[in-house]
Image (cartoon, rainbow, N blue to C red; front, side):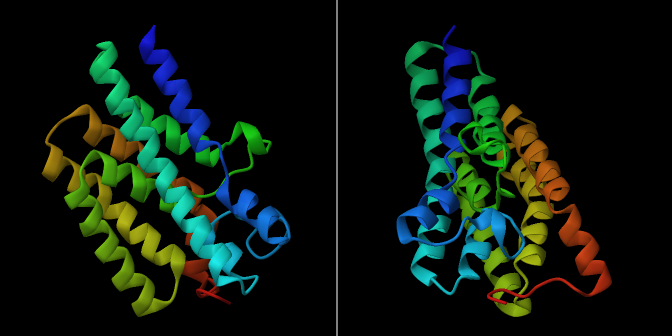
Amino acid sequence: MPELAIIVGAYLIGSVSFAVVVSRAFGLPDPHDYGSGNPGATNVLRTGNKAAALLTLAGDGVKGWLGVFLAQLFAARLGAVDWTVPAAAIAVFVGHLWPVFHRFRGGKGVATTAGIVLALHWPLGLVLFVVWAIMAFGFKISSLAALTAALILPLGAFWFLGNTLSAWAMLVVALLLFWRHRANIAQLLAGKERTIGR
């Protein structure tokens, strides 16, 4: 059953936490043990190591793109059913949130989502990146930028992709992004959310 193999493969790709891998390579503390405790680029940046944070961001983005790209490639070659790629997009994202290689302690999925969207429809990916960048540089709050992009994601997906399984998959991803940011939302409402680099 090629569909199952493709989806499991996407999950395993997503399960590689680059925050943990890069931190170990740079001799930095485990990102679960400081700051927000989130294994992501923003938290790695709190160590002051910009190179490690950039590599974390790039790695998490590339794995999202790679999981979907390989699913598209093998689904076409193996004649998998049409829901395989959307399911793989969700799987690589879920892998990042609950990685089997890191005791299911994953990140919030912002960079991975960017990679997924770029693989599915790169113009939408660019639109979301511009929105994220404007919010991030304007307000200096990573979570606010991520939540704004997450809000636009399903709307943009249905606009660009139509009423497709891929668009519905992006709705699932957006809802999971909001759920993973629930503590940040509480901090934002309380006016206590950390700024980027703090």
